Length: 489
Image (tube, rainbow, N blue to C red):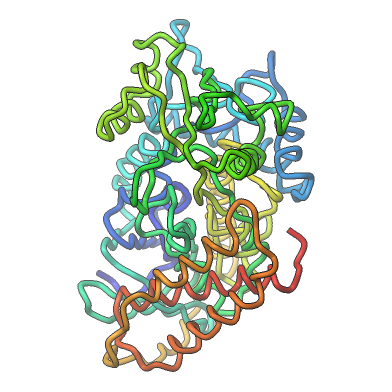
């Protein structure tokens, strides 16, 4: 593998892969995947992509309004307008490269309804849309002669030098360096900061931590979405999601007594935005003294359920639940991040030459709460914008020589103590879950700050465990610092 590239993309989800697809063949691009290419939060996305594709029954104003309502009107309006107006062409580009969205008998794209949407505008591939998109993007990007992949490779540092960056990487425990004139961070979410999450095992907030250490602005990291319907598996840290679309297709939410309860807390019932439903669940849990909750779609035809939700149906069967006959045990858990690395409309961070796209960013699109199925759309629109801006700069300014590489660390040091990540997760779960505990903010911040200082000064061996523990600690510290400082959520 070469040491120098025009562009390095850190992350291989939808944002990273879609960006890589945009570059002209005379621009050298490296896509760095922490594990195998297919492992990302994007691959776990079930519901679909929200986009206005039928202007006879939908329009941009409605999609913008739905996004603002879900986001509690704390969204960046210009960012929302960019998302909604530019997104449809990106969705159609996915169709062109081979994503097999579900269609009606007429051949028209099928569009479903999800919570918070006023129109059926979510296009999907059954209940595994993210995987369908990632698989198609990998196939398309692999055809590009200018794109190289580095799998099972972890970036542990990003250094800014004249005219570009040097990145320190770990591959098979070997430490080395690579360089680029421009870097795009597309590392996804922070799920592993919590005890229970719908995110993949690699979601430790590495990109956010790297950007923070480089001096980039991190904004509204405490805007965390807790999904109301994760499968309530006993003692499983990574919980699979029961898609919003299941409720969109008629499932009802039941308490431990088998009673519908969501309408007691909001007139939209089960189809209220995610944060509203999660809040209702926790309040009902306190009222009933039970964490036993269920999603029930058994009123629907069994064949319809199997055809519409084959992946969820199969996963439930693996847990001993037949969703055509049985109620699905569910409970809220960490799902998505609305804040992150602050970027503008070209996905440029506050560090010149450093870009970011996808869940690790704060574009302002989501406000205080993400509207269902806007996440994949955001990844598409902003990663394309990043690639376009980088290409513009390469063409305008050329390829100036990079500054000298910094000295690589030896990697040797003390063995990392066990239990650091578990301690942080317990703090976060107890302090800042669906119903936050402000009285614990200061104490929890002090505990995490102590852990961060120990990691920085402890002279620990450079390993994947160390880098992930450092990332989790930094992310938790930023979240708790925002909370104790009373930053407006």
